[in-house]
Image 1 (cartoon, rainbow, N blue to C red):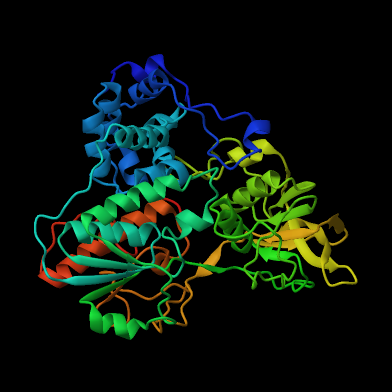
Image 2: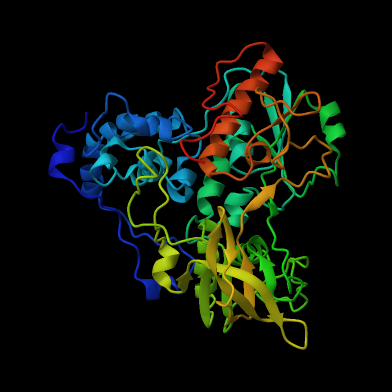
Length: 494
């Protein structure tokens, strides 16, 4: 135990300061300033080394949280790095972009603010890289078996790294020109700077993982060709089909899916395409061009993480105004009785983007979009939400109109793009698979959001690790690789 009296003497959370809002709105760098080592040590000391550490169950990876907290409190960085990587291939990603279900399950959270597990995690990996403690893990032998991984997001990369280290020859196929999937193109730099991805990819290349970019399966090469060329295939394409709104005016120009706004913006920040606005937007992002919110009244429909990413991006582009609409009620500031510990509570969250500006409106039901004579959106009709037999519906007589030059739909995702692969699709929209991650085609495994549906980065990594163990067993008859989750397991609260 780090400090038997730590949680008694330090009863509040402390995290690194965020850079001043006017400064960080001038760039896309990560928002946090450098952390204070003593502050981190104090937070690590709050971990109680519980007899039953629920944080282990809150995290699908089963991270050894009390153990690495103890190591950081004692200043044992090499031990902390080893403990962290025993369960998590990419803590620099989860430490920045995971909503930390481990903290929701922290036992200390029953009557105090939870331990800052996520901050300890990301500090360990960052300091570990700086100290040269994170090196390639070269396989001791080569098995002669080959595996193709489709998709280079967190599920695909974790599966590839596990299998490479087990001695298999792994090739990762990515349809974009650069690797990282959601990590690179879906998350803005102010939450995850991309040098963190590149640094980890360098490690994977040194270990022997091979990568082929600008290769779309089903277009440039078929799934059947991969099956004939490799001993096993893992599909990790993510859940990329966005949920839409079938209401009046949806086809107006200027109404875009969130990812059709965020992805080109991230490409511009990476220097991959021009920052000149595409004037040929169809309203459905088909052109793939950069969308500039400068001087526009922006409405974001959807109050989750993706909506917050759109907010932060629009503010950095100097939008005239940004309003986020959520159809439900504003969550409470603290856990309600309907969200008991250790479930994931539905509480009012203030992300860094919310600190930077914009307006958040709740109980807002969108009833239609209004266009100008040129076919572009100029407004959005909204009514107050009411609840009828459990359904959320507009309240008659409360309709009003909001100005809007750009509307971003951040409503989540319904499943993977399934047509090109020809695999069976389950009832929820994700690819069908059995309890061993096996899909509907022989030797084809499904991992991450492609099989689970829209979920968290930490679940994607956990599924990638588990699917790797199943593939290893399929190829060799047994496996010593860890299997943190089964395909149909759920979190405390989904």
